[in-house]
Amino acid sequence: MTKFIFITGGVVSSLGKGIIGASLGKLLRSRGFTVSIQKFDPYINVDPGTMSPFQHGEVFVTDDGAETDLDLGHYERFIDTNFSQLSNVTSGSVYQTVIQKERKGDYLGATVQVIPHITNEIKSRIVKAQKHFNPDFQIIEIGGTIGDIESLPFIEAIRQFKAEQGIGNAINIHCTLLPYLQTSGELKTKPSQHSVTVLRSYGLQPEILVCRTAKPIPKTEKDKLALFCSVAKEAVIECRDMKSIYEVPLALEEQNFAQVVLKLLQIPDRKAELTKWKSLVEKINHPERTIKIAIAGKYTKLSDAYISVVEDVKHDGDADNVKTEIKWINSEECIDAESCKELLKDVSGVIVPGGFGVRGIEGKLNVIRYVRENNVPFLGICLGMQCAVTEFARNVAGLNNANSTEFDENTQYPVVDLMLEQKNVKGYGGTMRLGAYNCTLKKGTKAYGMYGETKISERHRHRYEVNTEYIDTLKKSGLVFSGMSPDGMLAEVIELPNLDWFVACQFHPEFKSRPERPHPLFKGLVDAAIKRNVK
Image 1 (cartoon, helix red, strand yellow):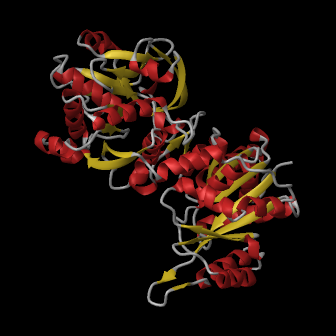
Image 2 (image 1 turned 30 degrees about the vertical axis):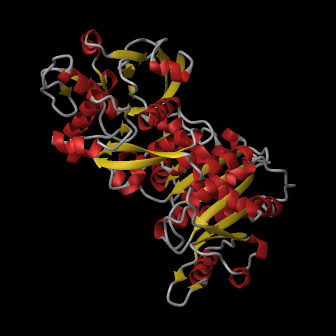
Image 3 (image 1 turned 180 degrees about the vertical axis):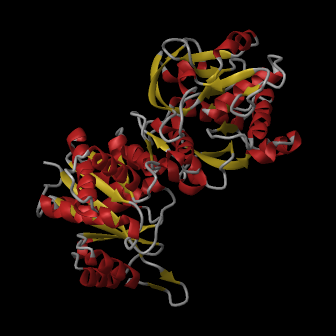
């Protein structure tokens, strides 16, 4: 029988509920239990796919093509499990379904209301995920902060669901902030007490408090929180700021976090196997050397826009016992070739990640030209691959002013064009090529050397592709198409074999990297960057 764990947050947003949920999932998995996680987001967007990265950070894509909240990336990385469209639920998707049912007459003429129709739909999403994954534990994180108007239907739904499950089958973990007053040298518990009071007013009593803090919590303050929030003393858990998010599971394990959860859910504890994870954290905290990797993109003012890319770079550095320092480069600052050269002179590797729109494109092309001409290890992702093809076409293949039709519909040489299946697509939400697709790698290439197999599957999120009409021309000039779709129609991976590491891919490899199992293409980049750094 699946046990349910609901995670709510109070006092302020961005407390790290996703990391806490992912850490708990890791601790349960380390004990041999199966775990699935859902993220409930209160915003009205059907999914984050049409939202600006500046608004919501990265859009994480699952194997089945769901565009989801970036927290799902943390869930997959920590728990090493692939989740699905059932794992991300928004107010928009819930209301859309309810309205569609009402239009079809499914409610038999009843007045459609938040209770019971919206709350029932939310509860049905929990049940669908439970039936699909059939886990020992299902963790459900409620986005936003207690007190937000838009999250009320979710809170009411989990109040009902928790009561329906009965004692010992569902619990609520509430995450709060303990602010530290520098002038008095005190951690203050009152905001957390008020947050729990608001939660209780909605009918939810938390069984566990996880307190974010910059300082150790004195026993007196823990006892006060337990007393005024009606939780057991051992259920007041400290979650202090860490150097790395991968330290969080170990810090929570030291406080018997998982043991408390299992006790409340009436499940016998098991011994945790965290040897590899501890080794990972040891490497993170004690690297042998540091290398600098540049990420040249257009959303660099918000690092969360490329969070999976950043984590993947770290994973591969950690595997080699190397600290990877990220240098953020706004591609708009690289329009001038000399400025581009100055910005890149101290890096050992460069990544040009995905994106949309013409802004900063010429800067990306300059970055790619510099790394190609100076043999700087390079990895292009999605738009980064399209830019690599465009730069090569212009400056090597002699196709002057070649471009993508995304940026110039009338270009003489459309080396990148809208996918055939996208020609008649209308609307933006969920209409791209999304999710996992197969790719065939060519033996003897760098990509094949890193994967070690010819058949791979990777996740996509794009509308444009390399124009097949120009592949032969580009090949004759030396560009190797090392990965193609099984039917040979879509270019998936390109590379320049005469350089140390110049590889680009149409898919998003960052979505499948794991801390204990780094992605091959990122590892190729980091390995080449380390060699360059040693030279």
